[in-house]
Image 1 (cartoon, rainbow, N blue to C red):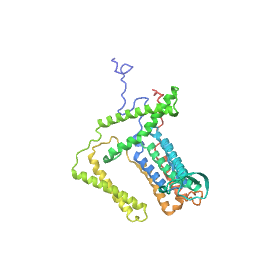
Image 2: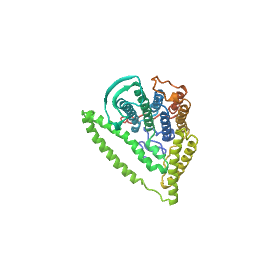
Image 3: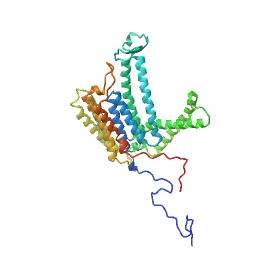
Image 4: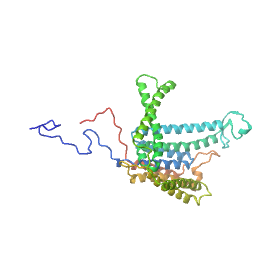
Length: 394
């Protein structure tokens, strides 16, 4: 009997795997429908950041940081760009310390009676009135600086959470055609820091294995040059890949459509700015919301028309499912409830420092912040990290 091709036994042919089935020993790829849309993560994180800008209460800000950190801890994927969250946390800590240092050296506009220490004051000319170097450092001034810096630190940590949870490449695919080129620039900028951190860790580990110093000025210089070389090579490869894929090529559209697109987009952005200003001021409460909605509608219409110049297709687009709506709605609820709390009880969200008293935790705004934990329960868990040293068994 003739032996079948590829079979170890005569007359028995090896069955072919079905189309799309992974080989034996290789785990099946995860369904893309099990992954959350990256835009939902960004909307959730930006909403938490918006909530952080509405308060200076350190207890609420610490709760916002804790909520975002817990979601990142349980839902961060095992990818190189997801490790950038630690860099954002360190940046937030540096901003906090720098703001306190400025308050110590340059003083604070907040008057205080509790003097902590006094620095030698440097006399300044008459044209520099209102600015001082050194002098008396009060507890009220440092507390005010701490509250203000903690708000900015919370905003940075929320942006870092979005950068760690959402895939930049998948987010780029979801952008409308009119924002594609701008989105490429933003994605390249956002992915530069994670790749840089990954290169530094890899080179430092290699130097430690070779018994060479990886700390101090000498180690930083010897690690920095290979990192710079790798960044330049990555830039050249990215430029060649973008050119091969036709990046920057646009379709021909009539002049009338191009002018209409520019007018709608520019008018919409101006309307958004004017409406936002009206909402933030007491005098513009009547016209702020209608102008903001009209500006958003005009900007969206301009983006839709502008997308006709960019001929793009999406391969396996990410679906916007019910979980994406829940994640976005949880962040929007936190921001809306904090804005409402600020209008109803501004003293609870922005505690004073004169007289110096410990801040109180408002209960229902704190419960509103806890709504931001919803993504930790409704989104899929990240895949386990694969060990490259383990070979698949058959």
